[in-house]
Every structure is written in C-alpha cells, then in structure tokens.
Image (cartoon, rainbow, N blue to C red):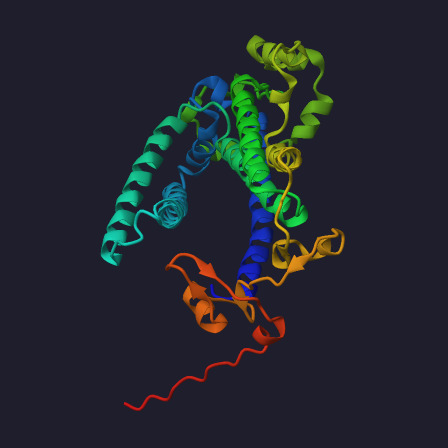
Length: 378
C-alpha cells in the first residue's frame, strides 16, 4: 500500500470483521452450552475431552459424524485458517526482524544474503510456533482468552507510547522508554497471575453428566429428534421449572461442590481477577502515566523546536510550544521512499541511513509537479 488512504481504509474494514468474529464466538459458546445442558452431558466432566479447548471439535464430530464429509470439512477449514494466519504472521515477524533489529548489521550485505537471513529467521520462528503449539495443549484456560491477554499485555503499553508522544510534547525518550518497560512488566505480571491464580470456576452451573451413559457411541439422530419432536424444553425453562430437589438429583456432588466454590473467600490478590479484556487499557494508561512522571523527573523534553507533525492536530493549539516546520513523511498522501524524499527535498545525507532535510516550505511540497510517464519509443 503506497497511499495513506488505502491504509486507513484497510484499518476501518477490519473493525466490522473483528465485531463479526466476536459475535460468532459468543453465539458458538451459547449454542454449545445450551446443547450440552439440554442433553445433560458435560464432555469435560465426563472425561470425553481432556481440555476445554477441545469441546468445539468434539461437538462437531459428535453431531456431524453421521453426515459424510462435514466433519472433515470442519477440520480442513480449521487447519487452513490456522496455517494461513500463522504463515503471514511469521513472514511479518521475519521482515520486522531484518529491518528493525538486524538492519544495522546487514547494512552492507547484498540482497541475496539478506533474503537468506530472512528465510532462516522464518524457519526459526516456525519451530518456535510448533513448540508453543505443543505446549498450548496443556493450557487449562481458553486459547482465545490467553491470546487476547498476551496481545493486550503487549499492545496496550505500545499504544500508550504513541499517544504519549502525540499528546504531550514534554515527554522525552527516557520517560517513553521507562513508561513502556514499567507498564509492560505490570501487564505481563497481571496476565500471568490471572492465568495461574485467577478465578477459574464457571459463572454458569455446569451441565450434568447423567445423559452421558451412552457416551460417544450414542445415536446422534435420536438426540437431534428430541429437539424437533416431543416436548420442547429450553435452557431457561429448565432453570425456571426445576426445583432444588430436581437440580440435586440431576447433578452430581462434584458439580454442586464446584458451584459452592464460587462463594469461597479468595486468598490471592484481587488484581488477578480483573478481566483479560482490560489488560490493554491498563497498559495504555500506565504507559502514559509513568512516561509523564519519568519525563518530568528527568527535565522533560529539552528540544527548542518540536516538529508539528509529531503532535496530534487537536493538541497543537493547546500547548504553548513553538513548532518547527515539519518534514512530511508523505507526498500528496502517497508514501514514498527515503531516496524519493531526498530527491524532491534536495536533502543532503551524511550517509545512506541518516537524512538531514532542509527547512521545509509547506507551500512548495503541496504543489509538487507530477512527473509524466515517458513514452515507450521501442
């Protein structure tokens, strides 16, 4: 993407897709809970699955095993979606590693050598991903929850750094670095503590195991016929019409004990019970807070003139700061390379990596001539 408008359009298009993805997850969880509640069979308690993350594959295989091909299509779609996302993520991490971490070391390297290093890094990241996948099967919590916790713990502080620099011109590099590290350490501490010591008891009563006598070999067509013929009992009807005696008769003592543990007094820190959805916001706020505190303690930003393009437009008039003419990162909303910037601006470079732009004239770069394509004389 060479234009900023294309990047903004891609980001805005991602918002409804994320909402749709979350809605599908919520609806799937409701369907699974209602299905096993009405069937009186909890596959996790009954021992049919060893981990809660295996409930959805078990549900698909249990319900669709009599329909030829559907279970295989589900498994194929599951692997295809995982591999496509994993491959793009690994390639992106390899490109970032080459550009941001090893860029100085590979400054004099040829393109062939850089490509070889990129392929090696892809293989290393792939092996790490395979190792993490083997370890993920032993996790007791939800995979989606753990993934969102990791992204929130890491993404919140990073987002806070951008807002710290875009809102507060007083922030310096010491405050930004310190605030990012402190907030990252706190969010990781909360995320790990919530997985190890946080509440794991379900909020809803667990389904009974009285309907699991026939186990995995039960006739699925008979089960599905109970939803279309005979008396229809919904999950809400089950709760409203069941007496305490019926509840105790249809639930084992272990189920009642699991529910009673919700009322027990917790001895761990209450911060571990904070929802994983708040980790990003916590890291965001802490990054700005500690960044400002450290910046004020270290003398704030001593730059006499700050580039106006580095501060959000809504905050420029609020601060009494003398801004300098900013060096634009784009021409006519189109992203350009460093060499093109040097060509148009007449910039002088000490070396190939450091560009020192001259004082910028806004009226000049807004009216840059567009180079006409040369006719093909061949």
